[in-house]
Length: 99
Length: 99
DNA sequence: GCTTTCGCTTTGCGGCGCAAAGTTCTCCGC
DNA sequence: GCGGAGAACTTTGCGCCGCAAAGCGAAAGC
Image (cartoon, rainbow over all chains, first blue to last red; front, side, top):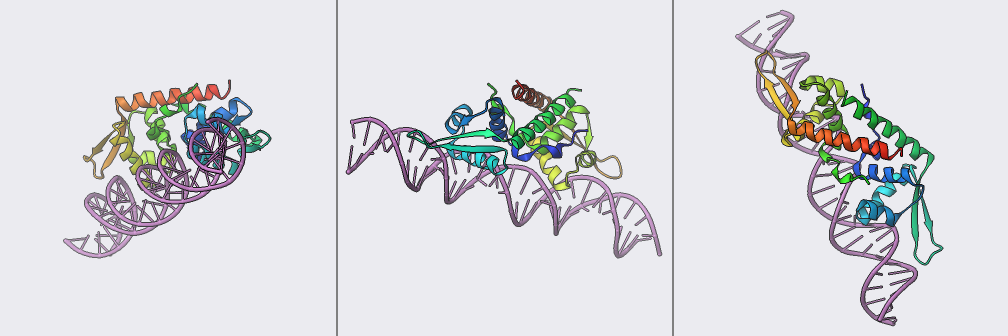
């Protein structure tokens, strides 16, 4: 049946699943926008972002041109691929649990 | 958009999601069958089952009539309801990430 | 210029997943 | 019938990780 081991732990975790879902819907997300949208604390969000950046699922860009720094994130190709695979698995789980 | 907070942490956790998915597909599952199907260690499985039983998502029945004990599990009404809600949310995430 | 606010970052704690060791049986060989 | 193997859980301990509270440096207001 379904191979649950293939659920990527990095992505599956609730907060990161929500982050990845947002990143999949729009190209660029600023730190502040993610924070506001998800209602996460600063420290919580940044640790998750660092985890995703370290996994090379997300690319971080810091724009210093404005008066205040503005850090933005976007999915890498690997991140998009891993997320798609994860979503496919979730879909399989949904179907299996209704069959 | 999607309220990720409603993802039930008890269910969302990878191993327990797999357990709940199995429990949703067939009424009764013996401890040994779950273990074999999921490839979890004894200790790992029992702690998850205890968590689910404590949450009243799963009912435990110990059949002592045979020579060896045989513990079986099945979803409670609350467990089935919570799992369905979780699956609905996962489905929404799948759809959102493809829109 | 001194304080407040913004935008992250670091630190500490508590909780939990996981496997290895332990326990209590039953069965089998002798 | 007794000792050891093995089944079926159970307990314990370690290590990681999510989370929020505190920290920190730069810009903005007064």
